Image (cartoon, rainbow over all chains, first blue to last red; front, side):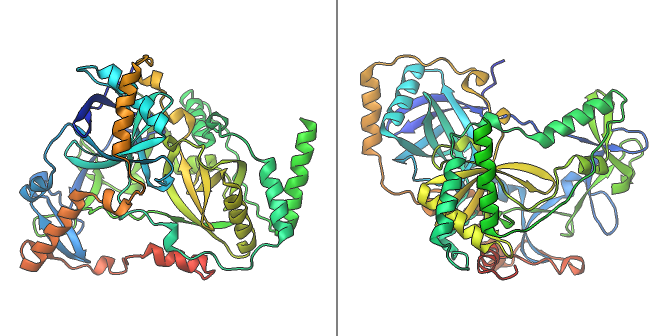
Length: 264
Length: 244
């Protein structure tokens, strides 16, 4: 079944506008639990309490505060918070384009699909823009307002479709450039050659379908069994650790790989 | 190869606390709807919903025993060209620093990956969960990005996007021209990625602080040992081989 658009807007590049719809590209697969009252297995509710007295504080008495130092808060009133909200807009402003490798993976937050919106030439402009971005190998730096929040992101074209990725805030991300390289002796030529050989043997193309969330699968299977009234058996957790020299580990890995290749 | 893991991002959003009428920080508590009584951690259990009012109870111990084996090792499965993984997969970043005794292996891996332009695809156990990660060498420092699994992503047909239509060449050319005129060589995260709402909020807080208006103070005996951790300093220490 087709997904429902979570937002409608328009890409604005200079004076050119392309109507689009926004869809989440992520499908939540987390196994979700509810908190239950142990005695009757009924859902519980949550409320805010004063931890000292244990008394409930009703919603209308709750204030919001920014902690400037431990125990010292600046109160922000409802009207303060409302005034901080950005003015509503339907424009996704694309002010500049950069080469596709300019923005490090570190910045990427959530992916969204853009689909053609309604309006003049929606489909045609959508696919024309996707093709143009792909040909130029560029991506657009985007700013927009959605549901009372500012967003920064990047507009990219992948396999004929447009994607909008939200990007993290500049204050959040730590760059490797601000850190010093790790201490310790440099590897020898022999070690580098061996490592290079090992890496080459493990070289391949990224195929996401080769990897599965095994923990999630185990939890799902366990729940299924338990729901049927069975007592599923659980394996004991093993912990084993061994250390060996880099060279010995590399040699062993190489030997194991060579053997595997021959067998295949 | 044992390594230490540090988040590559700090939470810097201006988060607000919920306070009572006298400014006292509030706590969120569970309570039973019928009796209205608060419930402690030992009074509640975790349930997976099968049907309305029908749950399978799953205990902490059961979940713990389903967890993968505890290890600090990165299990490298594959090496792929660093730019070949679509950004759709990336979730959260972590810096890896060498654990005691693994400086040599760490440097060797970082240098080899740098030279070959490859990223490692690996699995890694953290907080009782197995993560799929892509490992990049960022000028000698290893950075892991946790990845979404393939079934957590939708395809264009899952979303119901229309099939690609052939478009007149002139339309494509029009957009190509537009892209060219608006292209820049550099990207400046500090300029482009600073949330205005957070900025405005912090400014308002400063203004109120100066004017001494709307300020409340409460006794914080309970949490005086809460310290602000400077993540960059912790990382620098760890990379230098000192205990963090």
